[in-house]
Length: 172
Image (cartoon, rainbow, N blue to C red):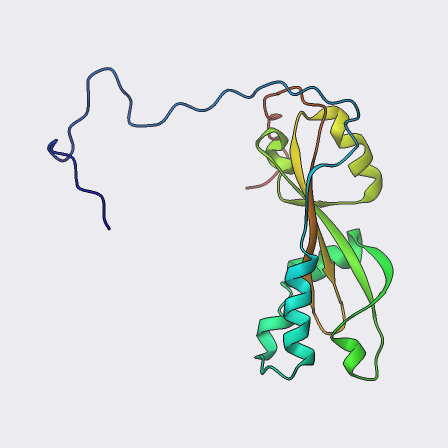
């Protein structure tokens, strides 16, 4: 059921209120170890359901499963960590390619770093520089372009900070 519209005229505002909601203040969180993952989400059940459909003969369009973005493939090539796991799609064919894990970071406090792929060494220093950010780990097969979100978690020391200024040499 739809919500009834308010009786106020369109375009009118209440005096003293701005049109934008106030941003929520970041709250300091007590964190014992900034490098220890918090609020972990595993996506194994979702992956299992997709693979059961594939192995069970469910018809998939080639783009439904193996649709890795070219930027993700490039990030896997330069920033990824090769795992010992065999690609679940390639194992159906004769090629047995290993999966690569790519780590992305997102958060308001990261500023221009948000949305970038990071290597493992850099990920170890970031929790001491930023209060809170979310980490996403994606598995990618560089041969068949299978990709799936493996896990996500939060890192940081819990101290709210302003986003760093964008470097002058960074192009828009």
